[in-house]
Amino acid sequence: MRKDFLEILSGELIAVTGGLLAGLSLAIFKDKLLLIPGLFILLPGLLEMRGNISGSLAARIGSALHLGTLSANAKFNNKTILRNIFASFLLVIFVSLVLGSLAYVATLIFFKIQFIEIIYISVFAAVLSNIILLPLTIKTSLWLYKKGHDPDNIMGPYITTIGDVVCILAILLAITVVV
Amino acid sequence: MKLIIKIIRESVKVLIFASILSSFGGIGLESLNQKLVTILPFLILFPALNNLVGNFGIIFSSRFTTLLYMGKVKKNIFKSIEMRRLISSIFIIALVCTTYIAILANVIAFLKGFPFDLNVFLKILFSSVLMAVVLCIILIFISVIVGFHLLKKRKDPDNFLTPITTAIADLGCMLMISGMLYFFF
Image (cartoon, rainbow over all chains, first blue to last red; front, side, top):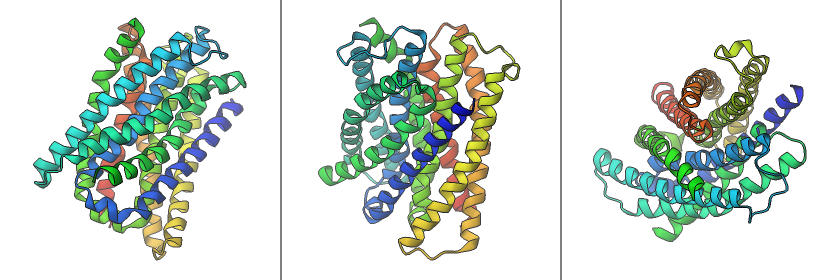
């Protein structure tokens, strides 16, 4: 129990520190943020998506490891892993399109601003961040399990730490490229 | 191929639901974006707070589903020692982490040139702790109800619970942040 508590606490402290770094990136580029209409509508959804998709992926891998249907020594060419990555990536593209479209429509309806680029920013940032996040999620889950840790305790905070920073940097890069 | 279709089919609806929820929350934030950007500690705190509560959703739902699959949880979750320990751990960690990020966000904002104001600091600290505790209670309650329901329907809770809990955490977090920005600042 003490091990579980410490695993969760240390994971969370690292995660929120990563979140603060992401916040600091926002603070540094705050002038840019105000120039993109609908960005604050898009931002929470994009930040959440990496948790939803990578988090579900980590939870599936965690359950498979605990149940013994996936070996901790599995490589990336393992069928279960490949199929999980492929499915997650399709979801990323689809959900980022939905998020971008919702941000576009909401900005148009509530703030009377037409800004189609928000859809491109959404897809570009989501694809870019998940190219890094999805393989990292799998690799880390397997490694943690092999080292005797419970991925369920650590992966959530770990994904969000890396995810927040990667996602915000990807958004800022997407803004620079698209706008 | 079956696994891919199963994952997409089970996840897509809930992800769209999560996207709609977070966009709703984002509208509140967008309308207060000027205020959010001006009160620097809040802008710095926002992603950390958002992911802290979301993390509890992920940790609780993934541990809960693992315990469910292992048959270690009964309908009354408080009869399970593992669940009692998990819940108490989450609340203690929530208190420690919110205090930590509130302090650090103010320190970073101060270093970035935002003047330190005890009143602003206390408001941020109080609202962060309140937000984390309230949202944790909601997340645990929803995870348990939805988790049992999904298992009964023979669906994999791993594909549903994480998006549902993080979406609720996000929406709750943004609504509470928007509310606090509106009423306190």
